[in-house]
Amino acid sequence: MANTPSAKKATRKIAARTAVNKSRRSRVRTFIRKVEEAITAGDHAVAFAALKAAEPEINRAATKGIVHANLAARKVSRLNSRVKALQA
View 1 (cartoon, rainbow, N blue to C red):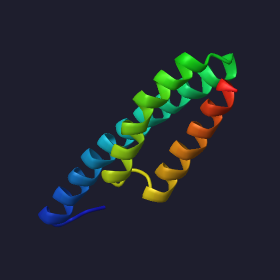
View 2: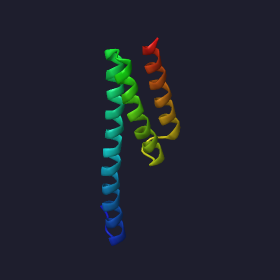
View 3: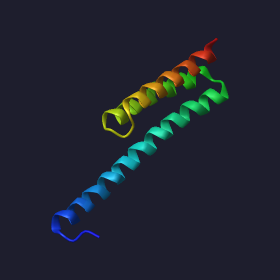
C-alpha cells in the first residue's frame, strides 16, 4: 500500500488512466465486432461501412498506446482483406 503522498497520487493517476484505457479498448473491440458481424452476415456494403468506421478507431488506439501499432495495422489489413473477399 502506498504511504507517501506522491505514491498515493500516483495510484490515483494510474486508476484514472486505467479506466480511460479500458474504455478505449472496449470501444475498439465494439467497432471490430460490428465489422465481423457484417462479414459473417455476408453483406459487403454494411461490412465496408463498418470497416471505414472502425479503421480510424483502431489507428487512434495505436496512437494513444492502447494497442501496438503493428497490431492495429494487422487488424485493419486482415479485416480489409475479409471485406474485399465478400465483394467477389
